[in-house]
Every structure is written in structure tokens, then in C-alpha cells.
Length: 146
Image (spheres, rainbow, N blue to C red):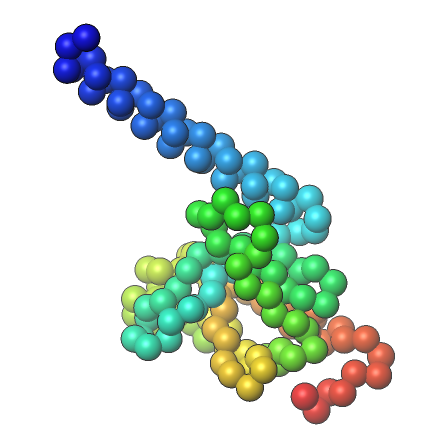
């Protein structure tokens, strides 16, 4: 078999693997959406440099937790979870500088307190309304001072 045929076979196999990866990503997104509505939610994992450290993802409310899944991962479990009882909304702002390029278009940056630290999320304004409602709809008897 000539060398160019080996190269053509390798390109064909690589193309099939890429297509399978994207099909698996679409199937995963559908499975995640079955257990409740999902929404575009980015999470800032490194806040060391301004505008850097953002990862695109998908958020899903699951009872008392907000689950975050990375967009380009095939993992069936969430990468991060935030408990409603220990999370408090601080503020929101428009993306600045390089953040505007790193995030989905039209999203706002939300700062929250979580277990004594800051968590930065980015979501659409309509999702922010739902997020605030979810945080405020704590069960009766909740200590609102936390």
C-alpha cells in the first residue's frame, strides 16, 4: 500500500473521530436537558489576571444545588456544584475588556459569595432573573442572614 493511501486512511479515521466527538457532545447536552432546563453558564476558575480564566459551560438546577458542566467535556457528572444555602448574590456587571470575547454574547458577569469566598459566573440576563429567584426561594425557616 503506497504511503499516500496510509495518509488518506489516517485523515479519514481522524475525521470520523471528530464527528463522533461532536455527536457525543450533542447527545450529552440532550441528556443533561432531560432532568430539567439547562442554560448557558460560564464559570471563572482563575481570577488572577483581569478578563482571563473563564470556562464556557452549561448550568442546571438540581433541587438545592446549581450544577455546572463544561461545554466541551463528555463527563456525565457536573464539574462544580454550588449549594443554595451557602450561596449569596453580590452584584452583576457587564463584561469588561477581554471578558467580552471569552464569554457568550450578551451575558452579564455575576459575583456571588460562596462559603466565604467569591464565585464569578456569567449568564444571560433572563437566566440571572431565574438565578436570583432560585436563590431567594429558600425553604421556610431559612436563616436569611447567611
